[in-house]
Image (cartoon, rainbow, N blue to C red):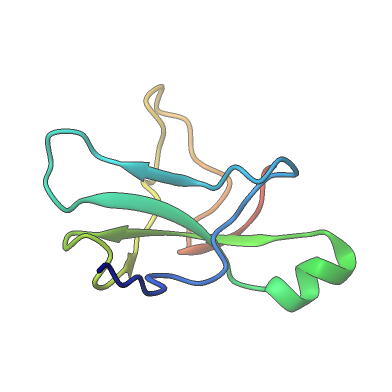
Length: 88
């Protein structure tokens, strides 16, 4: 018998139901997910605020990831905190 539990709530998804979740190959227990931090408000106005979170223990706990200051071309990102408006 197997039991399942919710690891993280309000994972961002698109209209087809695909979620923002990525398991890191070769790194046991590590995954990254985008969470909608304003689900009630987003349901009304359609504007999501996202937070990227990482787990190192197969979803036992999740911690926010801060965005890097610059992208791979040295350009600044449009956000600087762990919660940002969606670019979708």
